Amino acid sequence: MNYNWNWSIFFEPAPGGTGTYLNMLLSGLWLTIQTGVFAWIIALVFGSVIGVLRTLPSKTAYWIGFAYVEFFRNMPLLVQLFLWFFVLPELLPRSWGLWLKQMPYAPFYTAAIGIGLFMSARVAVQLAAGIASLPRGQKQAATALGLTTFQAYRYILLPIAFRIIMPPLTSEFLNTIKNTAVAITIGLIELTGQARSMQEFSFQVFEAFTAATVMYLLINIVVVTGMRFLERSLAIPGYITGK
Amino acid sequence: MFASFDFDVIRRSLGYLFLDGMTFTLTLTALSALGGIIFGTLIALMRLSGFKLLGRIAGVYVDFMRSLPLVLVIFWFYFLVPYIGQWVTGASRPVSVGAFTSALVTFIMFEAAYFSEIMRAGIQSISKGQPAAANALGLTYAQTMRYVVLPQAFRNMLPVLLTQTIVLFQDTSLVYVLSMPDFLGAASKVAQRDGRLVEMYLFAAVVYFTISCAASFAVRRLQARISIVR
Image (cartoon, rainbow over all chains, first blue to last red; front, side, top):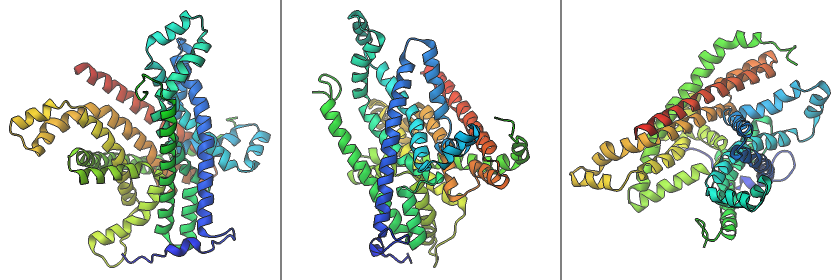
């Protein structure tokens, strides 16, 4: 392979005067983490609401949840980001659209919200499945004790369901972080974006992408380890992973 | 709100969008799914083969691919495939391959990791008595897999494989990052040429939504039919 390897490239100053190429990649890593966490919070909040709607006895609630999930699941994430970024400001009243377009960090907020909503549909499906997996007696016992539907969900169903779906939620969190790379298309220079621009400036393609790959693997290891720990400390005695 | 819309731009570009763009997208989806399932099955067989080393290699490959964003993998292969080509053909310089080939290799290698997990679950869902009976009948390992285990695993997992193919269909839109002429790429080219982002992106969204919805509805019907037979 006649390729000029140069691993010391990371310590050479990058154009732009903000430090070395390594600094550049690290700032991308930080942005990836920020976007991922912000998107994950949105995904959890919206996903929980929609997931609960899908399990309520009301037909209307079920259909709202169904439509929401189908809407966000049947379009590529890239197209959804384009809709939020390019289309939404044009459809709003002129002054609002202008405000959106001039907002600082617009790619960051668009990416976080767009990816968050995209992932929320997946969280909703997981949560609905988790709630459905609980024995029927849980809900009945809660009702017999005089809890309202809200209380039953708040104190009985959700605390158990969330712990049961911890493993799939871990992989959805990882998916959220991975999906932030799609935001490169709306101008968010996160980790993949920084690796790409490092490649364009320095022509050291494989070093740049190797570094980004290693960083993504590290994120994965940290998240998986953290979630294992959380899982173990939240395990319910008598349930699957409980003691 | 829709007063300033120019729906004619969609009509004018329909030929380009579907004959060029959608054909690219669908061909890429179909070939990647086919290659991904074949490769994925091989990886699953490696993992379940009982040879520690083979299983370890396959496991590392799957975990590795699944922890990387597809966009990064697309970039990787875009730059790597010419060197692989050089290595395979023994040429003196990196071989230039077309955009389509590069994308196809990327998606096959990437999706194989996901398909292999599905096939692994499918193979594990077959009861132990089946390969044991096949063995007792004197079938070799290859015959057992070919005639007994894989047909059933494949059939059990068909709905999941198809669902993953729908995800793949949506994921092919990411070749946009290499400005390839898939459906979204074509829509985006027209959008930028005519300054009609709103119309073109809304139209692209509707098309993707319709196809994915119809496909997942069909998969659900299929699933219902299969589960009745069993």
